[in-house]
Picture 1 (cartoon, rainbow, N blue to C red):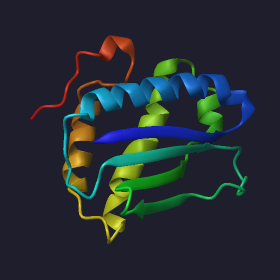
Picture 2: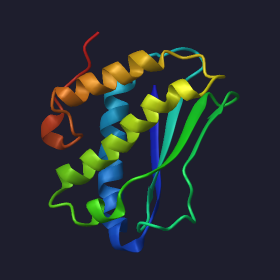
Picture 3: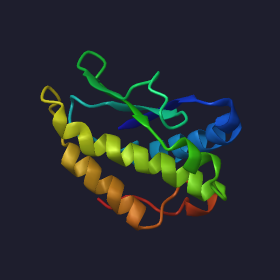
Picture 4: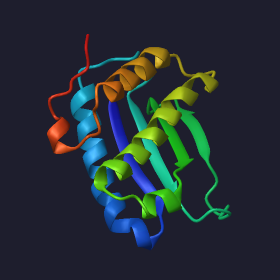
Length: 144
């Protein structure tokens, strides 16, 4: 399983988003690289939308590409919360919350034949263990 993360973000959070995005993507790919959730699912492409409240220019989109075996989730992350977060852990938590929401919605995709319930369970188990993708959390691993 692979995670790819990007964003449609305002300039005022661009640098801190890029740092959080890189740390989350690297950490999740390290943790989930050896895990298989079915042949139909190879990648979750999560695109965080960090725009001011009321900005509807970037709507949420959720779809599955059978050919690429990729779920694309363009989901909103609260811009104000991200902007006013006190530290990198809080910003990573906001991204992880969005990714968890994307995984939880996989059941809505009728054409996706994957074990999304197990993926969600593994993701939540990792978070409960204290994983937040920061360097000091590198010892947390998924249980088989």
